[in-house]
Image (cartoon, rainbow, N blue to C red):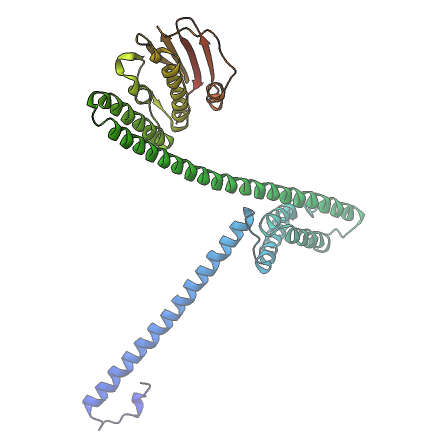
Length: 369
């Protein structure tokens, strides 16, 4: 309430006078609070707008997107003003410095606003270098020559920045495509693992029905099927976390009976990608041993040993008492897998078919992670 207390007479009731005074004070406080709130809203809005500007400039600097034209022009003018201030400071020592301070302005304006803003900055910088004097000298032929050199350097700077931005944009597209393809590969692998698990479950159920009246045969088949399923689960797990090499070998060789193989080596944790590669190799060797090697013979044995020297892993797969391999056929998928699986780890695989059995040596680098 905006009532002046000078017009309130002495005979005015005290209680009503006090009421008007209290209402006036409340109204004054409310107006002050509204003004403070309005100023605070304006300050918050300005801060939000500045944060948006900084984000636009950051995206322009990284080459993700170009900032608005007005923002780019404003940033270029700021760079020119700072360059002119630097030129004035240098003029106190060397008054013949005309264009050098404007080269960084062209660089930053181009990096943030793009080629058009950079060209505009170069033109305005050249005009300021010729028209603005901080000494007694005037524009002459030498300054015109320096102007042409400045524009040439600015042109090379603008071209270099744009070339770099195009390369960076291509690299971002490639990285995005690789991420999408990796996600698709992961989806396909998960689906295949799910289908394989379902097939093993169906095979397990069918065999259980067929061998229901043959408990002894079923008991010998049951644990092998379960071990194969556990191996597939282990490979799926190590693809994301890695595992110990002994656990990996036990998972692969367990279905063939623990009395058929011997493992020698210190505990060694394998990173995820190396664990998957070795799991594929061990699975291929174990499958061949079950078909043609030590595990296909009643007296066949397998010895697997590994050592680690610095960051080099050496694994020896040695089969004995198996059937002699008289003739080796053409290299199939398994042989190609054995020879190429360790290539990403600066490794190699050498396999020999001896009279006593298969002898395979694997060497590779163990990543630090």
